[in-house]
Structures are given as structure tokens and as C-alpha cells.
Length: 407
Image 1: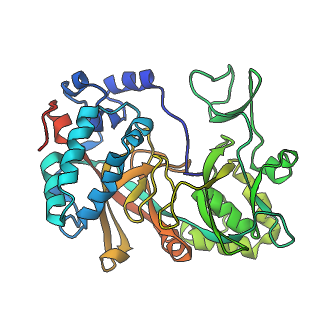
Image 2: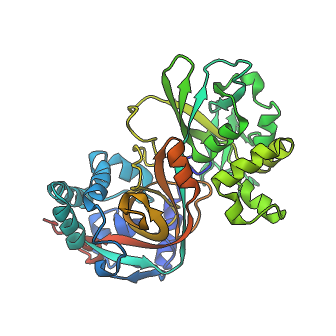
């Protein structure tokens, strides 16, 4: 989602070539595109090391029924696999795994047996790093007032993701989106230009906030619940982006000697911005990436925000990843030393489902854990900046090169 989300879909032919070279891509491993593909021996990247469930930290105490129910969201909406994976999943593969998962969704013991019987853990050899993210909840207004004057913008007309098919000659490699006018794709204004009024004449303002800092962090998180003046609640979510590179402003402050990375957790960065209002906007502009929003009406107030896979996120079970390395709908066990409040403050060790991504989420073992909505979730998310171990569960039917029923 977000300044954390990208709409780019890797070129299929290029990815297939990379796979034959042993390149970094796991989607064909998790969901083979055809029956014939499933019958071939899979090529596992060098950074995957076969492991065991006994080696997974906290496996015996995890609420695996919750993890299974999170996975079943994809089974209820198979298009989430198709649209989000690098390769189209085999309907046979999905059908068999989902039927077995549905039968196991009656107890924690059955869920544990499902995972242990139908999957094999493969540890990612690289040391991982996780952060947390959340859905902010702030006051807002549908109309501009003296109090509410900071806009969140709708996406402009003509916004397009840059692909191999539509990429103009000499288009900058780092620019992932553009704006089509007639037959021409042009660069959109960046954050600084938009803050200075580059889009004002287009009347794209969706809603108005009272705090520029809140607005900035909503851009980073990619969604928010907004409490309107009439007492109603409005949810906004990611609709697109300018395509400029994301720059973490906390890292910029560290480079200037303003503090250490530990000083600029989410709460620490908020404090610095509040204490330095004369430097705030200039710092914001250093992050040239800018996000556009839409009003989200397809979910209930009790659901989480919509992730990149098109499904509501689940607190403590949804993991944002780099889709170059993991497909959406994959099962990834994450172990880290930050306290898990749902497990008596012991170290975090859970089976998560990959259903989101973000501009700042890059690399093999980089993840962002969705914590929930509201200020308390924000406090928890802001303190998560930790090394972690990543272990993906690969379906045995893919590893065995078979398409046998898994019941």
C-alpha cells in the first residue's frame, strides 16, 4: 500500500529467463503456472535453505488457526493470487491446497497438521529486517476550512504505471509512473511541486486534514480512517503515485547528524517534526514520492485496510514484502526479538501471509508487519525496527513436481 506500495508488475518473459538462471523469484515455486510446469523440478534460489518445522522459533505456541484463516482469504478470492503473483497460479494447485485448508479450519491442531503435512520450510539465508505499519485514525473534513487545510489528493486523470510495453524511449529508470496526455506520457509533479500548488487548478482534493505531519504519515502508511465533523467515519486508501523514488526522511536526518536510527522511530520522527516546524516542509520535499488516495467503500468499519493483493489486511498476520521475491498469498514465518504482545511479550514468532507491499520494502528478506488501526497500533508499529529470520513454506506438491491431491 502506499509510499509503501508499488503497482509495478514484473515482465513475465524477463522473469522466466531470470528463473532459468537461478535468479531470485519464488512465485513459480509457490504457484506454478501450468500442470506441465509443476511436473518439472523447481529451481530453488541459492538463498533458500531447507529447514524443518522443529527449527521454527515459537512454532509450538503460534495460533496457527489464525494463520490458516488469514490464508483462506485468498481461497475465497482466487483472483488475488492471479492478479498479484508474477505467474498465474494453477487452478488445480490452488484448488487442492484450498480444499485441504478449508477442511483444517476447525481447530488449531488441524491447522498445524495442515501446514506440517503439505508444506516444507525453507529459510532465507540472508539476515532479514522488519518494520511495522498501521492505519492512522485522524480528524478530517470533506471541505476546506480554517482548521482543515491540508489536502489528500485523488489521482489525476491519465495516471499510468510504466511497463515494458508503454515505456517511452529515454524514460528515467527510477520513474515508475507517468501521466498520459493524448499519445504522450509525461512526468508528474513531485511532492515538492505538489506542495507548492502544481495540482491546485485540477481540484483533486479528496479530503482535508488539520496537521501536515498527520498527512505525511498517512502517505507513508498508505491508508487511514478519518473521523469527519458530522461523526461519520471515512476510510481512504492508496489509488496511485507520482512514481518518483521514495526517500526516508528519518534516514536523511541521520545522515545530517541529527540523531541515530534509534532516535528516528515513528514517534521520534514525529517529535522532531513538531519541534522543528521551520524545517518540516523542506524535509518533506526531500521525499519526492507522492501518493494519491481514493475513498474506500467496499469494506466495513471492522475490516482492515485493503492491501496490494486486494484483500483487507489482518493485524499481526499480514506481511508486506517485495513482490520481486515473494508472491502474494505466500506463507512466511517471521521470527524477531521485538515483543509480541499477543504472546505474553515474548519474542515475535508467527506465520504470516504476504498480501501487501511498499515503495520502501525492497529486497529478499525485508518485511513490514501490519499491526492494526489507531493510535495504539501506531505506537506499537513505530517501535518495530528489528533484524528477523524469514522462512517461506513451499507446497510439497510443487517441490515433488507432482499435482497429486493433497487430501
